[in-house]
Length: 239
Ligand code: SF4
Image 1: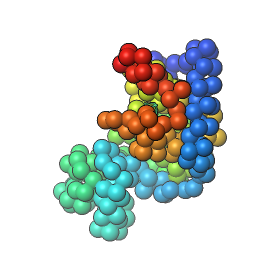
Image 2 (image 1 turned 30 degrees about the vertical axis):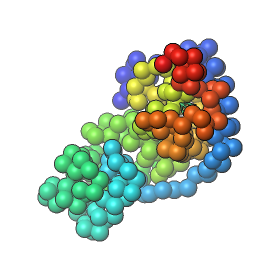
Image 3 (image 1 turned 90 degrees about the vertical axis):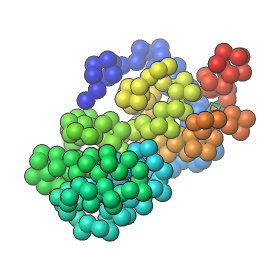
């Protein structure tokens, strides 16, 4: 759960400025990438496992490890109850397998203990804040994983902040300097209209992968320069 400092609202003036800036940026990203419409990605427990596998790796390595888990174990119950070494060996392609294997089993055990069954379907009947509160009570589930499950599996208005979104929105100035990823969830959910969470999530990630890359942002190819704090600082020599 976020602390009270993490969940404090933005002051009204900052909120208004950032909403205006976001609207301009979102329009330009939509011109570039279109407006993705929601489609269900994975069932909720699959999404949970996939998100844990996705930490610090590429989508293709994550998908390879996820496919290997599904091929080796007939159910999530079997994954939960398998010797941890078998799970670790199966997910090697995702990297950090020694951490992710126990983390997956812990999340599956916690879910079973809390609900008596390995299902997250009950989240469909909770509002988004109650869903986040429930998920983030479980060890190993932070605000990003909770938001991913709620948005991608249930089409609920939650905005996940991954490493690309954290970096790109930080450079643009849509979140404050030195804002943590946990706090960025609160700030960006206040700025972005909930109906746009899905499209914005996908478009900002795509921009982070294709243009605003971590090591060397390709500002010369970016249509957002007029709205970007980082670009303005570099241009004025204030880096
Ligand atoms: S102008 Fe540069 S730093 Fe700013 S969003 Fe575009 S690529 Fe990223």
